Length: 229
Image (cartoon, rainbow, N blue to C red; front, side, top):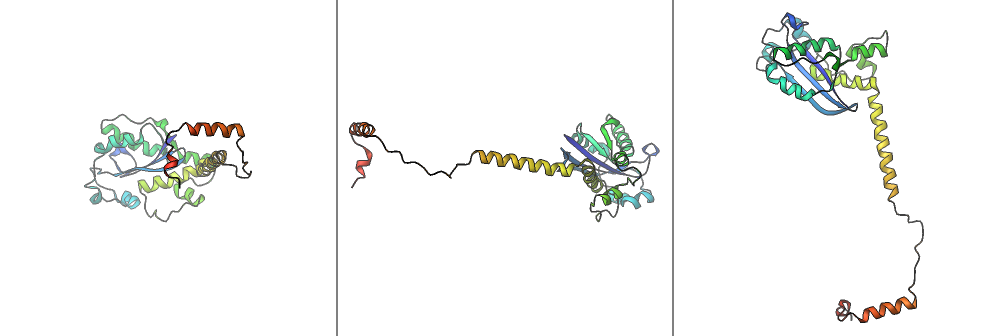
């Protein structure tokens, strides 16, 4: 099972008001385990950066001015996510921006049902409790020291840990590893040689010795005679 944890940073709240995606971060999961494969890019929004947005993610238009346009990375982004389920915190927001960017770049939008919203998951699992990413990280004792500002890849990595905690993924991974070790131990035991028994010495009978001597006489130049004496 392949899943992609995804996060974006943008210039504002609504793509249809002219706002754009400025960063995409994706983290790959297989069977609820992080693989280490990621997709990350900054993007030139081709517009100004509102101060309130820059205060959130710290990305200035000067920093982004030489970064690629979305249309130039769209194909590699789609290749990375393939048809995998997308794990997104507040999925409606990110999907709205990603689909707007895809349509402007001439690609088909992603189906909304592909996204699993971890905000909704958290609200169902912990009713009445804060469902923000910071709050969930604190709930699971996930280190937040690197999160001075929002960042798409950093937030996707944190969200991956939060999602795995909510799904029991870390515990499942430990159980799976333990099961595999037990199976390996069983296979190793099946091939172990039993050294607890003393070996038996079996002597040849007179008839067997005579047959062996007769066979030896038929060999004209046995090699062992060359090294004898």
